[in-house]
Amino acid sequence: MLGIRIAIIVFGILLPYLVRIPGGSIWLQQYMDGGITGFLFFGLFNAIAWGAILAFTFLYKRKLPIICPVLFGFLPLAWVHGTYDLSSDAQAAIGLVFIPIYALVPIAIGGLMGYLMDRYLLK
Image (cartoon, rainbow, N blue to C red; front, side, top):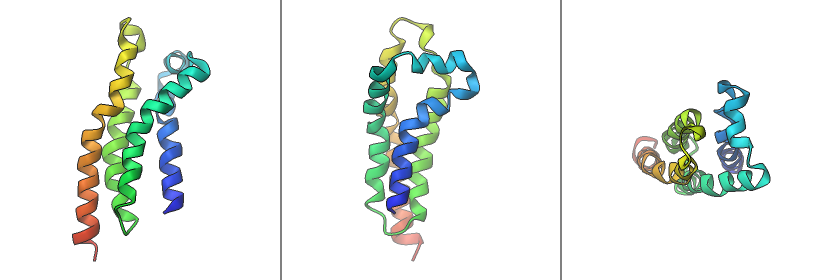
């Protein structure tokens, strides 16, 4: 379980950058322009999302149910970070604060599904 938890943390930190790579260097540069301050900004706010996923791993007895909060949490985050255009508006960067907060709903749904799977389906 420790390895899975470390993978969740590392992937959660790198996710906003990895999903922008297919958009090209200009698209990736929007997230990289902030330097170390920007990296800490992304790390702080994305810790809300991957921290919630990580919290659900402590409720499970088995490894398989972890896939539910991971998929329900990281897929919406990947989609939003991959399509979010910071150059669209002067206040677009404010939306970066709310992305991981909005992701808590699908993470909770996936976490509940994983919990039910862990307790009732996998015996």
